[in-house]
Image (spheres, rainbow, N blue to C red):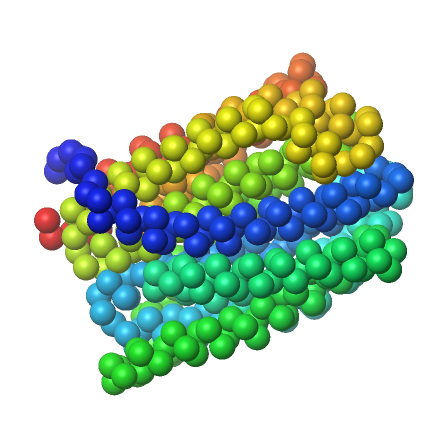
Length: 445
């Protein structure tokens, strides 16, 4: 089988941007929210407020995004069903994911006390930070059903290629969250508890809007006469295996970033706070590049559902061109305006000094990180989740080895270097698996 690459047409470029642009705008609202959280807390009088929100956010990234397969698995399966024009199955996939998410949320509520104990034990932060992080946790935990339902909704919208609905949903949720942040923290003085409460309210508000958008989207599918069969044993089995692979992959990814934060917490509060500021730069990067990953998910899934190798390769090449261009733009922005952004995110002099010292790693991160984001989207769209799982396990092992070797020698610089090596490892391992993806996709041309 030849791996010759096609030259993308103008329509290919338009199609990628039609899907990617709303996703980029929607995704950028997520780190914008994180930046506002950081800014409103970062301008309080002590760095431990910022450290507490950083640790609290990591805990919930670990808990909630660990179940991010509800987004990613839903996208790949939905795109393939749509490409095969199985409209009843397109709807059934959402209902199955929503039922699974509701069950998981109930379990999260049941085990919240031991989860909090384990998290605070692992981080080994100062007493003030642990107390405030616990306050954040006790408020934020009640958003579990809404968070998981929103994963299902956003994944389904991306899968059907309706990234504008995903944009509307995320901008509504994050815009409301930002407004409530300012009201609760700046207006009412609720500090850490205010940040958590704002997030909980906005997430439930988003579910209501998302279900209305879902109902509008399925009206045209109802006209096809194909009814959804939700409890189909083979379909459920496939969904569970795909979700298990993505769960393991996502758990490893979150563990890597959580371990990164935990290692910073062991150094001192100012290093932890400086890294909390800089990690917002990485979030801006990841959510921006994920717009092209989402475009790849939808287009690759549809191409595989239709059995077209030509469409698959056109989607891969076009998304790669634009993702690399945007990554270069990020590098230019971080190099030129990084110090200004740091100043906007925190008013604590010691934290600003630390963040500026390590800013160089965020300047090189976009060109290093872009490939892992894009390849994730390709493999999600193809539902080649076993390869994603294996690649991530290898990459995590490389990251942990790098931290244990480099951090004792180079301190926080060694920690950031290890994170960059993690991104390189993710890209290389997935790239090695790509030819297998095409061989096993059952393509016709």
